[in-house]
Length: 609
Image 1 (cartoon, rainbow, N blue to C red):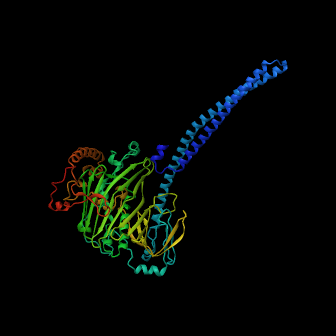
Image 2 (tube, helix red, strand yellow):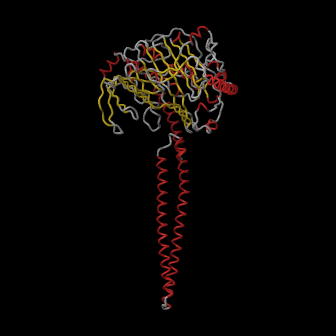
Image 3 (cartoon, rainbow, N blue to C red):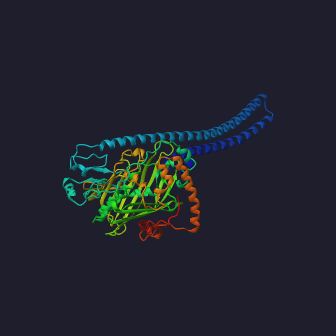
């Protein structure tokens, strides 16, 4: 039980108290047995003395009738001592039986607890399906006009035709505040003010509503995923507690994209950064940056498959300069621990860079994925420099049931130029919570800690912002903590998830961007993920060949890695530098890649495939 409790983070805390109670009961029984043993010793001592006295009496000259009486008393004293010894032995037997049965009870209790957990997981799956159906019903087209869009709330709060209605949202397990939507007059002011939100959609280049210029036609589908069955538990049961990156995995558990490509998917909603670059207000800019940080999780809700671990020196470029004004480059700079460096430069006024190391642990019933490393975002015109880190992702139902992913934890976004902050909370999913699943809440504050915007939404659907017009101290919450009540303008939509492409459930649940990431392109470096043979074979549905190729590449990489380590070979496009903002040493882009692409000269690239 000690081992089980340590390995399973979601084991109920009551199991520890149950076990302590059983152990306490056994200690009391042992103590009582000791008391009985002491009494038995005393009985034996005094019984022996009594028998000696009776024997002495028998030796005296007494009448025959008196001698018979003494003999009878002596026999009864002997029987009493024998009975007391038998009682002590029976108590010992009882204690041994109690210890044996307590272990059986513990095993039975553990079995019942596991059965209940399995039942809860089944109920959770049913609840998720119910929630999806309910959400689909709520989001179905209705006869309401577009003028209601400004009043759109999260699914559990129905939009009201009464503009004077106040919405009270007591957020459990979230930042200690309550929001109150302002009345009609302030709502009308918010519509004409600068905080008006606009829905982002794939058919628009930016929030000004300009239609995109004709762009290169990219693919809209990949071959359907083959229906191969494989028992995950048969492979994972020997891997408990190990780093996921060190477990040899067949491609059956993968999706045909590398981790570098998954990292590039953070740019799916780059329009948010384009709009943020045009903001005059740094606080409004912070809201858009926060929405961008949340949007990177929207693709994960159905993506339970594992991306390919990149080979050391593997790269991935995404050149969208003509279409969207940005160029992105990733390189795998370390293999153990696996680390990738990423750099994006945009002609629309921003630069983003990050070095991410993935730490992952298999816990028996779930898998924890902890991205380590800071994400940096710099806006060219204002000089605003934002830094934040990712939250923990958890893959549930590893052993039994349908796999599902949750995001939980806190993100603090800091503008190091102005010292303004945004605190975001990703609430972990719970069937017993009344909150909307996958809920995200946040507060944007200035350098003095004064709140200016409330953020709310879900990481798989949308994020809204509401400007705070007044704040006051409210009553105590469920834990006795005093909550702050914020009066806000009507919430405005910052970000809305794009709908998945048709037939996405058979194409690894890829988004429109993900479908294009492994599309073959001319002129890329010869270490690019698009050229990785096992990944390409898997995408084509040739999984047996892909597994053989994957094994060949991994064996080749081991030999190359030992040689590179011996020669202390540095990454090709990134080098380590100390960051002046965070003080951390990490890999940053040193230049040269796009120039090499222009020259079509990749002679410096290693042969990794």
